[in-house]
Length: 246
Length: 246
Image 1 (cartoon, rainbow over the protein chains, first blue to last red):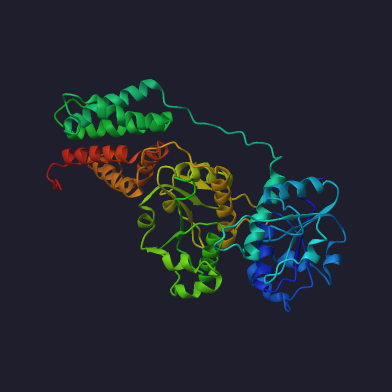
Image 2 (cartoon, rainbow over the protein chains, first blue to last red):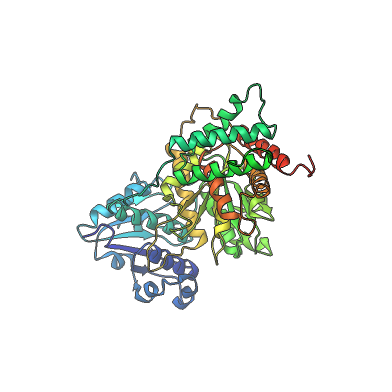
């Protein structure tokens, strides 16, 4: 089984239809489809449609469970999200470790990522249903994340966890600039900049080399080097129109 | 400087006060404070307060810039978020690589994470202001993420990046080129190259942007950017000697 394929998102005691819809959208963004709401405080689920944007199929297929226990009953592994770093001496996972565990455990069956309600989060009792807890590290200024935003962070990580086994893209690089072209460019830069009174004719090298080094660092392609060369040919001719146009 | 300390969040053409507020909240969650909105379509910023929840100080301190260019002018490095994987042959970064680059570049000065508007995202023109692009990998079912949710994912990663490299780097880098200087350079390059008949006056952008991108890749220091600027000031004057020497 592909890691991540069996992830269920469980929203416990969700209150805001906007959040419910936004979670549907982000689930669709990251390729997850199974959503369960347990003991929802939302009365009219159709209000969630506006925020669901192309996640409507997830809202339509959502299961409603009367209790948290029933919401989780077909899962082999559950991680509960909390903002409390101390819960009965249990050490929470980092988001990255939680995503890894969920992927590992998903080879055994359905796994769930559980979110508490907007006002109180998950209670100690709720968390007893979870094999692991996770905390998204936040700033002391504002430790409490919006439900839809924390789901975005975690579903992104779960998605990436599933993706990491994807074969790397074969990257095709364009041809690099040949040294001959770079030397020609250097000559044309010097001529144009001397003619324009930018370089000191007594000691032009120092500044010229400094500019050349910036182009070296850019790792020009051959095409780019030729563009620069051509630009300085034109500039040099325009500055000193009397000289040969060869 | 602590990596991540200098991150600016820039929202271009944001339309929804709810999104603006939600971005403030998630910035507060992850310890970021500097917010700029450019060309905002929001008329009444106070409507964003409800969603900002303890991120009100960020909303209050937000800077409003009339153009994207002005929003970015004090930054040395900008990553633009897009859902398009093909933008003028530029290969976008992954979110993780972008967070890493932002942390690295933040040792040189202010860095920005740029988000486009809800309806059209960032245009090709907007993206020319970005040294790098990033794409959050999403499912084909619903590739378009909500602004507040994509900011949650990316600010989480930036926060983690800052945390993981916790001890400040003792390495002192020279100050990076500010975007204001780079924009001035771009203007001078255009003028000199047009006057020298190198650029096609009907469509100068394509070639000009190609050259500019090579300088972006070089990660110019402020000193180097000023050298180039000065060089093109001289070249432009020498090509068109009748114009003012101011």
